[in-house]
Structures are given as structure tokens and as C-alpha cells.
Length: 77
Picture (cartoon, rainbow, N blue to C red):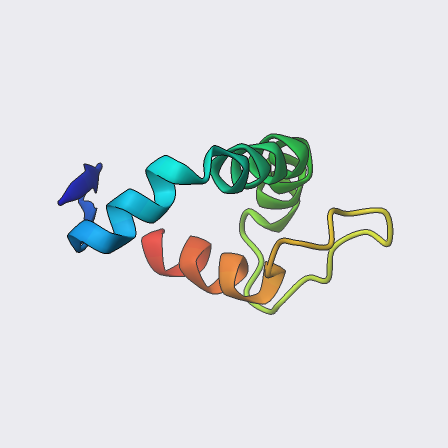
């Protein structure tokens, strides 16, 4: 089991072996997170207090599901 904050993920041995043997997959996923971080931060700041979905800027990172992010952000407030 891998745990981060209150979220945990259970992995089977073959899944762990796959991840260990494919560091490129992990690197690419981390690169996407790093690339999206400034856009996500800006988006969260812009939707603070909003009651309806606010679309992101046209230049925002395309790999982020902003509708889900908006829902999660509003639920946590």
C-alpha cells in the first residue's frame, strides 16, 4: 500500500514490478504534474468563492480536469 495524506492505493506485486521496470512512466507522470502546477495554483486562486464552474484560461494546461478540480475544491471548503 502507498499512502499520501489520507489517500492510499493498494498495488499488487505485478503492478509494482511494472512501475519499477518502467521509470519512464513515472518520470512522465511527474513531469506532467510539474508542468500543470502553476496553472492549477492560478486556477484555484481564481475560483475561490465561486459557486458555479469557472472555465480555465485558454492557455491552461490541457491534462488537468478542471471540472473535477472545481468540484473537489468546493467540496473541501
